[in-house]
Image (cartoon, one colour):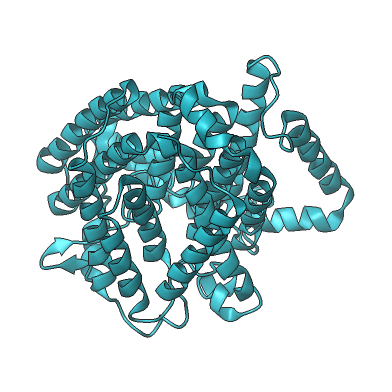
Length: 464
């Protein structure tokens, strides 16, 4: 079956629909409920619609306007609907027959191993079994759903990445008008921009993922190349106002791997005519030169790196104290302590010492079921060892290498996208969180894993 090639008109129409959807989600009290209810109904459509509903629903769950929502109080209904959407999408993916592929079989083998380890960890290892059990089930069902839907939409792989880019465009368009107003800077004492999303860090890593997807979609869809490159650059530029250092680090990793991949492939030119390795190299060198010449630019970079008033590690004699009290230092020291005490199997999947207390204090329960238990562990390797130990890590690491290997078969752009998406977990851990933008991260990872094995006849249909 020949698929309809996306056009500027269809891209504008779909982005406009997302702007309306996310705009509805901004309405206090009822907005998220309305938007998620619409998406739950849409999730029972064809596989592509199910996948789009799922990732759009994740964005809706991240939308909040502060201080408008500050005095409203917690409403568990949007959280319940968010999980219902995931369960509906998973059920829909399981009742549709598809043609299994080699990469699908490989992903499912890893899924089975990971699921087994997480469930056993929750039952026999975890310090808080109820939270670990809930997170193990949600992670396993979420990953199963994403793998199934990616397999069922193989022919529309480029369209799915385009949709993620369009989500970033919609968030960008709704957030930019808030730059002059307090409502867009409502968290973290108004120091960092969070736009329409709930936190500046959330917005930063969200735009890393959607911006990177824009560049890969540009590689896949030459007719939309200029528009998608501008869209990706615009999304990444907004990251500066979030002061999200993790996002910047992920982008630097992405660019570095892209240049390496291009040269490893014998200097083969990228199909993105305007974003080649020489262009990236010259841009980076130009920025370095500008920083060396301009004191204002150096000051801006230092302010971004130190998050404004935070004490610099280089300007203090008590470096150990600053490191431990820094934005991620205490998390790293806590993880190391957990690893030393529980090296083989970890402390418990999805939990740390404060998880139960935090969940009870914030009443994140529905009929006795924990709905949310965020874990402040910002560095993926240490967090994995702390939660599931060496045994669990021996499955997670090969799983990620298999995805990267498949991505490299596709293109240098796919390999760079993998690094950008995974890179956000070296400061903002979303890897195991299917209740937030971790779901979008996994959708992108699985899509690029599948895309590395897409037959060329499909690619020609999509890009010509």
